[in-house]
Image (cartoon, rainbow, N blue to C red; front, side, top):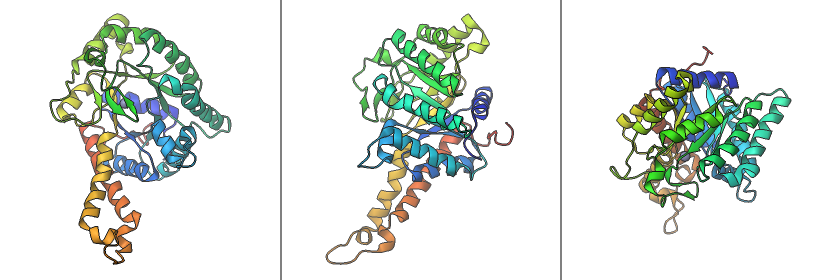
Length: 343
Ligand SMILES: [Zn+2]
């Protein structure tokens, strides 16, 4: 199956909301990691989301080109082709886009989908994130409104964020942000609903103490009840249909029990980057340490071609990511829940 159509993607999200599970959304940067994601989702019989950051796009475009839009389109086109081989549904998404990158990154990608649609080839992307969390909420919502309308014209879902995810990701460092900013208030959640309701479908990354990166146990104070209280505030005022589709950022290292608590409060997408970065690198290090004198030409020796052929250790990396991601499917309860063939 190729990437989910907009209708199928919407039904995937509905199924997760109704079934109290969430999709792992894995950040990929190469064909190897796209294949790892597809393998994991297929093996788990789970649908899922593959996403690209601006840094991934730039990386994928090559050292001489360094063009985030171009590289992201290349990765998305590759994902469309590679996904054809699997009997699960995949959504393609782009991660954090700060206000300064809207014109140079987000709008050209929406235009790329519009072009594909015009040619009768369907959407290039299923959803995009606009991260206006650095702005005052009012300005954040003004830009979110403009982008949501633009996305809705192209059957794209927009993810927005209010509140700040702590830590560092893709060169954006929030580790010095005041602690109270890490928690979205119920008033903010009501304001987000009021600003965006009716303009198009959106997902919402509310923050509840989550941070990007991986921390030792105890360093992060997650308060999932923030999500529960915010949902309640919105639904008390606007009815059950006002329930948000929530996104969990910065979940690496979170104990399964806490992850699962958020599923009851409407989280349907959880981003996974740091944990799979480690899962990629770990088997490579293992290979290199075990085969030190084969991957290197030591003291005039010639090493072993089989050991230093990049495919040897990239296959191990692909399998490592797939194993970690399958665990994510299990923890987020998307395992066995593919809606492929049903929607
Ligand atoms: Zn994030």
